[in-house]
Image (cartoon, rainbow, N blue to C red; front, side, top):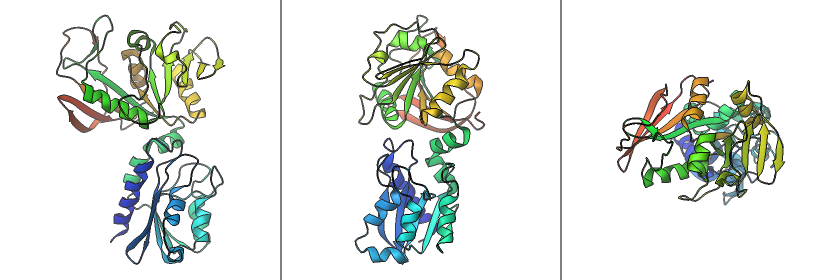
Length: 343
């Protein structure tokens, strides 16, 4: 078997941590001795053991690790965080070789793990399935390289490309299966965001109900604090951050975060970066979606198109980019669009 074969397995294992490890990356590790997999592991939950440690612990005969090759999709960490450095554990176990897909963009690592391993006399190979590894951890890479969250735009539109009726009512354009997809996404991203009009018209809960998983942080744009306090987003059952230009207040499960009017979006993204929120689904409405699109500050769009028509109403935004996938969701079409030059 080739290095690519075992690295693909490491990438598959890494997905086991989806929705549980942020702000850490998704990491899988495979230990191979003489062409046989002797151990596997992945990072399961933030604050718990990393993939390399879990893989080592899964080996029945620990003496085998000393002559093994470790395949790991991201450079082993070299610093003390919630857990000790993984590079040190690999050195301690005297692995013979480490094969890596991507170097870690985190300034706390950024080549330090590779340097440690090589200085200990361990052979290190990098760049194996590098593109697939970067795609897997695209949120992590955007967060560290652009110092902002990974932005996903999501909306449902009618066949005649409308988001809502003229009065703002938009329930329900997509079918129940499409809505289940949305709840699954919420369970795997850090935060979900809506604008003032969507919060007022739809009164969304922005929680995970049709899927199993954690609730995202709820984000609301309400520049002048005009939204009523009895909305679901202010029920304090889950953390809500309300960005405005008037005042800053910290309450249990509710933060009124003041940002500047002149640099509203940039300030919001910087504040989310400081809060270590790595990914955000922007769920509307039209003005909020357009704010991100016009700034070029989005990474992918997920657009449901229903066979229904409204005839007249609020137009869906036009989004530039390259369509990379299309799915049929029981009659609704889902297009995944990638921004090839995000800000």
